[in-house]
Image 1 (tube, rainbow, N blue to C red):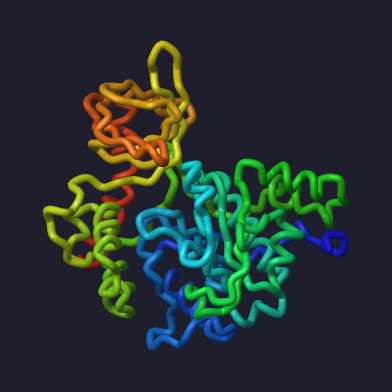
Image 2 (cartoon, rainbow, N blue to C red):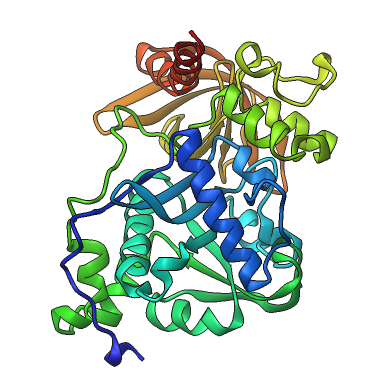
Length: 389
């Protein structure tokens, strides 16, 4: 199969690949997804003509799009595992990743407009390349999982080096209307070596390693990053209200835990009026940001650890060393910036070696970093205000 592969480094100049950021771009992406999934039997027809699922509401989910002459013609979404879990959790066992405190995401909702499916290779591979570059460079993931039709598993395993999850086949995957599916995964940290071993001895037209890793395309638009972060939130309060309250009833169908999880990742003041109502006493006071940052616990020697999520008042870290009392953390927040945080261990989850740290004292780097993450939502709110005025 790999010997029959033929890739081209030339891409039509009318293509652009980017993050979907506007209500119009997301609407077009959800319509292409709806039409494709209904045609394949993966979903039932919706009155809105859009496929809208709860995972799209999370700021840690990113929808990527391909445009041709400014029109959305392809889409794929990256759903980071958080308070909602993953769609794959319902049928596949991802406990090996969870037990290792790996940060994982599910690749989902891949769809191509009907008039581009006959020329699938012209769009499919560039869209996968853009997805790979964005995921590898900007999402700070450890592994990705994907659920595919049994007819497509050979492509992902044979061409892209995916491996099968335990008990990888299911006859009914509820997320896609109960059709059969195969669960696969790819380790982001070792994927380049896998690609190199499979392809880097081949000629250019058959070399997917050079295509995915080395080839640079001017058609790709990527975010600018001053600090490390793991997502690119795009949902303003108005957009959340439109997609999840007006054209769908997704918010009304959330469980209490999901409502609490949603309130924990959006600023209370700017988003409360569109999020599902919950008991304010149970609502977090500080927004939580999912991260995947290397850090060091400073004792006599530096002990390596990992920060999993942060807020203005606390940090969740994972460490093989048992922690208690007051600790000093050094956290890499940008290429040339390391923040120092002093905090008190508030709780421990011994099963996963995770700890909740209440922040006592920070430096300027940390304050700048947290403000940088919050600025996403401030910018979205200001943009909504501009449109209304």
